[in-house]
Length: 114
Image 1 (cartoon, rainbow, N blue to C red):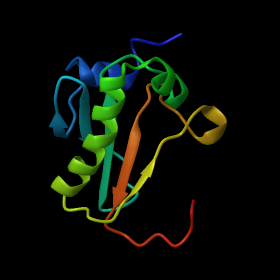
Image 2 (image 1 turned 60 degrees about the vertical axis):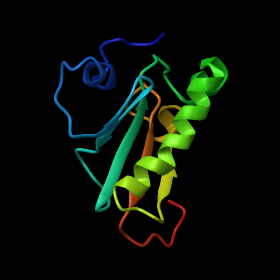
Image 3 (image 1 turned 90 degrees about the horizontal axis):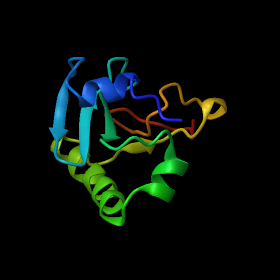
Image 4 (image 1 turned 120 degrees about the vertical axis):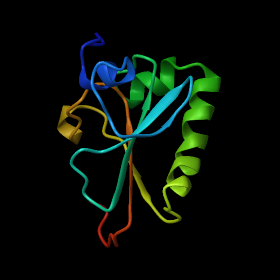
């Protein structure tokens, strides 16, 4: 069950401050508070989806399309022409906040997959 009190839900509702880089009716994008690279942005859908599985199966087609198209726009608006995108699905994959989100990571060289 989706936890409406997770940190991303609170950020979306404006209850917790964040460093926004983009927002519209479907998504919010914020700078990660613990960046692993010079550019580290979290793209978060405003709908209550716990993980990638829920988002991919339950989001409306326009939500899905908008989300993935905006990732590229957001990355480029922050100066990232080359970047990595990461989404974890479940605790064993490293997901710690159970509201689906995608990391845009750029500004450093990555030679390994992980």
